[in-house]
Length: 607
Image (cartoon, rainbow, N blue to C red; front, top):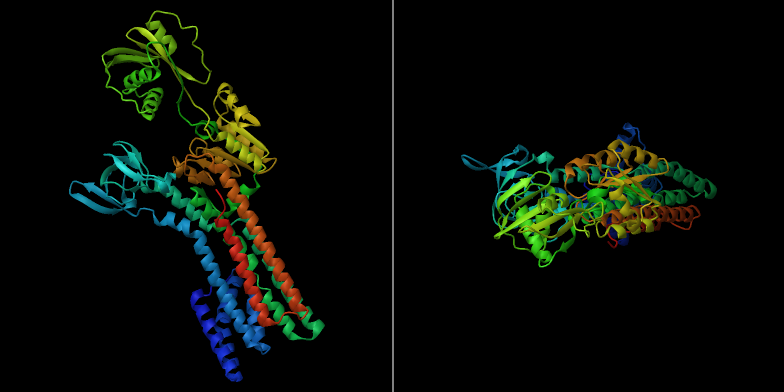
């Protein structure tokens, strides 16, 4: 609808004028009543005319011309009451539209409003408050209790943070000294010092704000098609109104047709539904670039997945321990993790993390000697511990491998010896996410006909996922260029989505009709290439995004179709003299309210 200054002020004027006119009619003062009602029509009609002229200068003919024609015709035909009702209904429709959009955009506004604007920088002269845009990499910052982390960085002391806006984690988390923290997290503990590791524009929350801004500005092709279709309504309405007048000789019928033919179902239904869908997704920590993305997502029939970090956990996890008596599994893991604490190897870090998850108490190692790429040896709790690859450990023990030492090709096996004797094996591997099977099954239920895996890993690491996850195809050992080629081939048979981590898969995400990036890590990069960013490490949000997209599109179609059908019935009734102008205006407003309320259903729905 055209913007009539402050819709609430216009509504108040229309309501006051209509009330005064009706009161004068009740007192038998018909002529003053007609004058008041005519005056009530003039301000909104003049403002509509102004906006129509502006639209014409921009090369567009706004369908608000129907409302203007209805108001002017009511005055010219001596029906100022009908004109005042149309003015009231029209301005009321604007207020309703504003209310609906504010309701739908509330969750998006909360994300934007939380964006940090300043930071407390520590310098030799003390602490000064600076705009967040002036923070540089390496700056020392002070974050008071209750303040938002201004940029990505590391904390100098333990910090308790509410990361729900960034990661979706509902409970505060404790980040140890030296741990990375993301902008947008809320400090719910004591004041903490941090070091900036990124500028504000390159930080996590900047990516969130950028995507929210695009989501609020973008228009779906579906919405633009609704705009184009609405242009046909103007000549069609004028033809029906003119035909009713000519056939009956009653100008009142033409006026009634104009009154009930306002294009609000077309103008309101799609925008409100798609903004509601985007807000619903944001509430579930799914950032959607815009209405066009939701529409394309609803049409996808092929989904490509990356493997590492997407369908799998993306890191080494414990898959088994084979302990040799008299040692227990926890004892071996404790000794191994204690020894590995000083190593920077990725496997060593994974082992230490596994021990921490189990709550094992680690000792400080001494006399540690590391053989790069093979293993290491040292003293732990008074015992000599040797750990590394199976060939390395057994060569040091001068004995052959045990006959039972077998492993899956995709696993990493660490051999452990204690005081010169073989103690056991610890196995680690990159396992599928526990929800991965349910995710692919849910996508099948949504009508996704083809689910494929694209990975740079070898086939031996990828093929075991085929059966458990129900994958149709696996492309293994692919270069980035080969991934792009696979996506382009997939697009030949319809819209495709690519699900990846948003960093390594940026080209593939950009090539797909809908790119879906998992996790807030790399959000700033993915905000440039991905259409959807899932802020939480939950693969289950992927089918949820599909569900929101399809439900939103369905509700938009329902709202538009039902609203237009009801308006068409009202137009027919008016053309045949069954609906007078004033009741017609009330009927049309009821249709508008029903359309908006139905479109707002896209805000809800089960997760």
